[in-house]
Amino acid sequence: MKVTAVNCAEQKDSGQPVPNPLAPIREMVSACIQCGTCTGSCPNAFAMDYTPRAMWRMVLSGETEAIFESQTFMVCSACYYCTLRCPRGLPLTDAMAALKRIAAQQDLANHRRSVRFYQAFMESIRKHGRVHETEFMARYLISMKNPVLALQFTPLGMKLMAKGKLNIGSPAKGTFRLEAIFRKARELEEPK
Image (cartoon, rainbow, N blue to C red):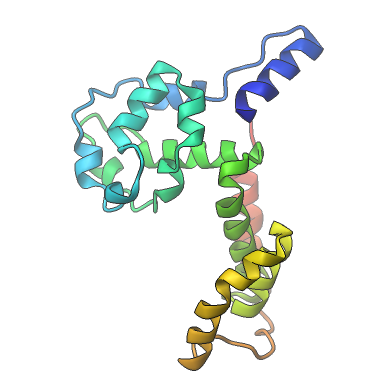
């Protein structure tokens, strides 16, 4: 698992212990009483390989490899039901987002597709103010460096074109108003 390998390599090079990337997340969920309200509230729990309740238990137990081999935090749609209904008031959606950030920062292989898809989507929004479907998919496919992947999306692309759901024209112009929002989000996401 890359998370462990990176931490060990950094520790060997510097001789100093490297902070555990799960430590801030563990602190967020440290008061979890394992009641399962988060799982019962999650509209995506059916699609997760571990329920949110199980994920918090794994975080508290320090099961780093199992956590980052899981798809649970990538399936989270950040609807905030778990956070709103948590009887302890824990920031569970923020904890899921923190797991996503670690996976993206460490470029973990089993999350690479999701991370690149999200990055291409957000870049299209930043650039045009909305998703320009053809450019978005082109960015995603180029970032994946896998020509076979494009063939997997061909049937879906044909269906969307037949229904007029794909914009193959030139992208919208004059949408730089979003740049300030993206700049502020980058500032907030930078580690302190």
